[in-house]
Picture 1: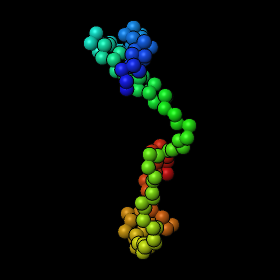
Picture 2: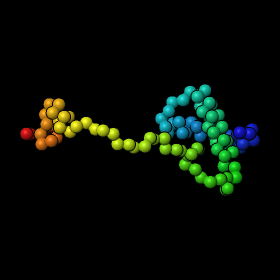
Picture 3: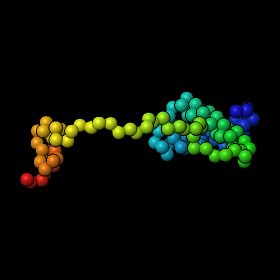
Picture 4: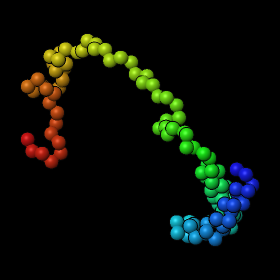
Length: 108
């Protein structure tokens, strides 16, 4: 950020503007906080102005700053548990399924 761009932006944002916005946001800021917020906001706006000044016509838009690669392993089927053996260990099994307590509010 150049000193010229900070001066140019400081004409756009001043302490009164920051006070107004703080009041609208219902923020109670001390004099020091208002001064710091004014300086920081002016600096941010100057930085945005510098970015706006860049010639980006030949730059392709991107969704990520770097190429993403799928790092997941191959999906390979493995042996599973025996259905009947698992149901035999369940506290309640009905019709080949796990039995669970009813949802609150439902009558049996």
